[in-house]
Amino acid sequence: MTILSRFAGALIIAAATAFPAGAATLQAARGPVVLTVTGAIDTTNSDHTAQFDMEMLEALPGRITKVETPWTEGTVSFEGPLGKSLIAAVGARGKMMHITAINDYAVDVPVEDFEKYPVILATKKDGAAMPVRDKGPIFIIYPFDVDKSLFSETYFNRSVWQVKSIEFN
Ligand SMILES: Nc1nc2c(c(=O)[nH]1)N[C@H]1C(S)=C(S)[C@@H](COP(=O)(O)O)O[C@H]1N2
Ligand SMILES: [Mo]
Image (cartoon, rainbow, N blue to C red; front, side, top):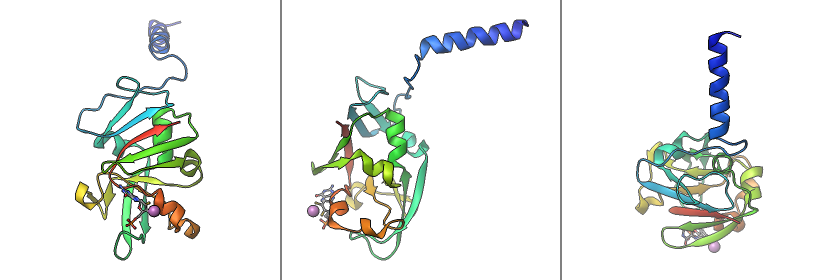
């Protein structure tokens, strides 16, 4: 065994000790917190919660969806992290999400929605950040482009804008 491979081995052991199997880590938010995730999650960065600033959200694997919605004119492009990416980032275990908006509108959404469909937490509309007055900074957008049957009252109810927090149960 060379000195170098011994050193590498020691590093791996140190890393394994610092990060026990299964428990991924999340950096601390550095910018303003735009989303707080709580409840049945394994990965946290602040007192049992996972706090995200915009940069952290936009670093998660995402998607662009070009859709018509009841809230916009014509075809609009929405972009943001996949719900599935958020679930992975926080190690969510629950079956339901209680999603709350800045105006305190809240709805229960099955976690299954984010697993079955490429739902996004849109952070941009037509390439630009959405101010609060334009339903930002986070707008749950279902993939109406992928599955037309989602264009219904059930999923409109779950299309929360001005999202502020998600609790997994
Ligand atoms: N932030 C926020 N998102 C929301 C709502 C709300 O009041 N606040 N209403 C929900 C419901 S119940 C539906 S049916 C649609 C309603 O959209 P509309 O008010 O433009 O018809 O948005 C959903 N998203
Ligand atoms: Mo509604």
